[in-house]
Image 1 (cartoon, rainbow, N blue to C red):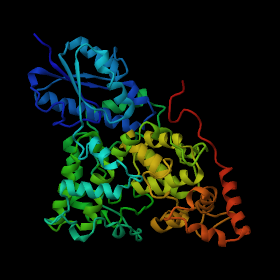
Image 2: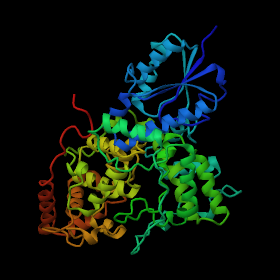
Image 3: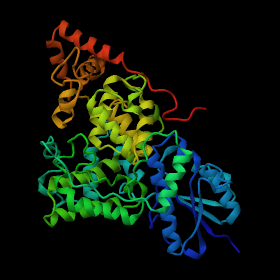
Length: 521
């Protein structure tokens, strides 16, 4: 009698209608789920991230079993755990003698490289299925990218709007007459700005068991476990989505770039962890957002901004990742060589903006996109921090970070390390931007109004130091080239003051100690 179909489900594939489950019969299928050391430690992930993934996996396995599926679940602490997907698949094949292994393609390059070897390693048939939870297939992205010198998200986004019909008129035009309402979504925070508290989910017995496991096995990893409040089931994730669409979407658009000290969530959806795990359907969320606008429950600028983050940016960076791999991992067009500062791990800095963003990152495994781009990322860009160190940091510290989404955002968007294939210009900014879009500066040791010397916001001299050292590359860029006319009008004395202030500050940075991001060999 032929053996069953063995269906490995990875930790970011927690979707009931996953392609590898679709059409299978429960009496002829064994679902394999694996907690493995390699995945928990290829970088030293934030403690909350490991809890989130393992707890969500265990809950999902329980739901499958309750629905009648046979689940072979391997816990991290199982005595014979091989420590890798390939090793655990080999053991499962010995246990079940399957006629077929059916798996959905991995989201990360290194895992897919291993997965591509399975057909040669194992005697049974192996099929690798496309992950059709994305709107855009990789072949579609490659077709779109063909012969394009610059791969701008805005134009890709318009194609996804046409494909899905989201926020489109019957005549095929964008609702409201514009594709993009970013100009309406850049309000600085008004005094006292706060948002309704997002739902917080109390750890149940399963999650508590995982918390204890992580505290025991991953004590040297970054991050706090004093509280863990992420949704770990589809039901909890849907409750989080309900709260966003009911209480926060109205103000999400206008204040999506705002930063307020101690207000870690503001009006953001906080759904990215659930989407990336597979607990929520991203297209269904976009359809729900559109329905909210059509029913008069949410403004167009907020809804368009939310939809653009998903079918625009999320789909785009996934396509860009596979289009640019593996060389994107080593890209360093600006030849940035400086070590990551130790304060990125400790939070011990007198720069109020960085201290607050790192505190939120440590406590919540989260910071919103402008904090990641224009505070944490902007500093690394201006200071010339080694891209590999920055990539590792972002991959470690955020609960929603998987390499396919993290690497393009960091290497290409934040650090311009790809030389401009993704971004039309480096997203470099002085202290003025942070002062405008946040309340951080009012309580800071440094002043954004002082440009150089003692007490000057370090972002000010670092900005001009960055622009000066990359003039040859950037002056011809039509979006920022005119900045050099301002630099030239300053005169030698003022220019030197900027450069000296920047050099003086950079000399104070303590390099991060080894072992924060990756285990020592």
